[in-house]
Image (cartoon, rainbow, N blue to C red):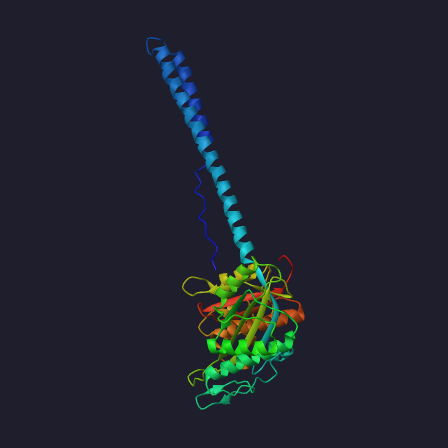
Length: 377
């Protein structure tokens, strides 16, 4: 995702000081008049007139050159400004492109359908209870029985396929133009095998592309601008984090699936990323709001806590009200997909924008706003 180019201002030359040029011309004319009044014994009239006239002509030419140089400079500055404006408009037009969420699935210890969203946003509702595993506390799905993370992720992939198969039915043909997967190849094979059983009309590749966080979402949005309207991109993943007694959060696990297209009820923006070395967090947050064509941040922000990012409370995103740590535990690189899915469900239920904020495989923080999809937006 390319940042907008910062253009330096065009160097402007100062405007000619017309009164100085006028005063100089008047002085030369006065000098010429004085020379004419002097007797020929003091000054040669023709030589004096030729000299002063030459000075006057040279001054006029210098004045015209200065004015033309000034006008050309201003013309070039105007052309430069218009070119910069066109470049910035083109950048923003591309930066505001979206992907529509056509279908989604989210499975975790606290959530298995959009109807569970209200409970996740209700502070009075108790989150799921973390279980002691011998290695630390963990939030686990009761339907998953594997002992290690690899086995559990394969079972999560199978559950994800079963859930999606129930949502889709058995008579809908689908061959995604691209497939992205977060997790192991073994978990992907389990997902593909289960889909082949429950939805044989869904054709998936043997090897998917690796889900790479916000960079993959950016590439998918680019891809959807060049494919037919009916094209679909599948993004899915499973995460079963290992318990860690040194962590303040229980280990979490979840499975997520998106089917993205050009048209749908809910739109994902490209989002923004924050790097402490290069960016100002408030500027990044403002750019995310501008990207979504909003005047102010969305009132609801779904997030995971980001203890390594100071200043979140100052950006006006209400980022600490609906933190999902207690509901999902530590999900590492799957955080963003989870909160984006929750934000999409909120948008579909309420018809208003919803912000999200999470970590990323490459950046310390990513954030964005999910909006109701508008055709052509």
